[in-house]
Image (cartoon, rainbow, N blue to C red; front, top):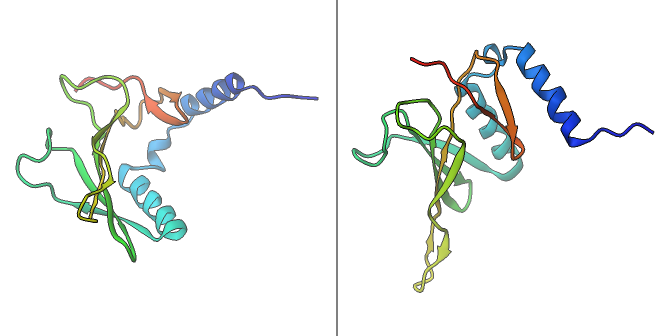
Length: 141
């Protein structure tokens, strides 16, 4: 019986990703649109891109998304910091800025998260970590 171990899968995936330039198929905008399509169809949740207030984000290219349910309203906010810049951490990470919780007055405090990683299309070097793909090398600008 043939068994495929996780390390084998990672090696196969890495080889495939290095051989194919996925940037022609998956722009950042197309990825967000696909994510919204999935969340809308499965959960009734839309991803609404919102212009941040002045001083709200730490870099000009940080994208602010609100997750809005069709009947329950705002579920949470996600800041997406996806592009390389000088002084930015070189590892993918996420941060819990504010937890979601019920308040004493019965209202709900919506969670706020930040996703910080590098998305450098066209370089062909990706690394599989924690069940999602994260680039480990970006071209210097």
